[in-house]
Length: 255
Image (tube, rainbow, N blue to C red; front, side):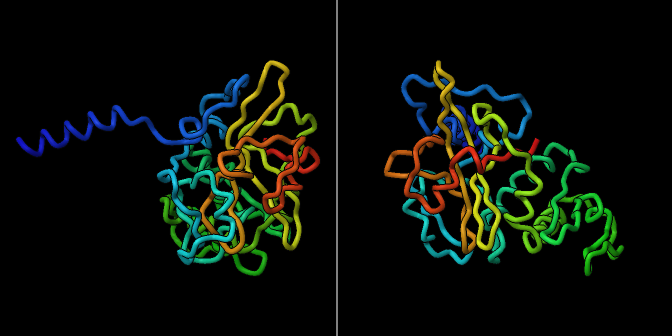
């Protein structure tokens, strides 16, 4: 009886605690409304990613406080791994890959290496492994999540901002910016940010939340440019790392 009561109590508590994500954590600025997103879209999926408790520090893959921690508005609750792999472009590819994987759109999961090699998930899940620019059949077919994550780590090792920028499509009209779009500049080092949420006013002026990983690999952090200021615009430069990339010329999208 006690165990049943405990379960009922947990259920009641969960019903009064809404999910903590960017939609619930960050108040919309006065005069703005939430940008509508398509149900089942990448934008909606990003909006619903869970956040770690308020006040959580951004940490590197080694567990140290990240040098970008002062720019933390929130930390997204996804793993960072145990190697220095999931950096800026890597986390963007991870998010896109995770979204497609969860939607079972396996044939759409594909990223190019800097060399130009097309690394698609279907080959990897069917047992092929990358070797010197070629696929070689070495394993059994396996579409389970741990194998997907090994595929993603392979992508991390050979892709980056240079390759991702070439894959993405330029946003011709910045007024059409949406969650899931990416500000990116390829280089060594390059950098990129992903848009997590967008709000707009009656004049269709937009503000948005940004997230990033960094070097060395760290938690995916939702950014602030000053304490309590986390809604960005493309017409106001900020003093965050690589803040000069948050302009229309660097804006790209997946589709």
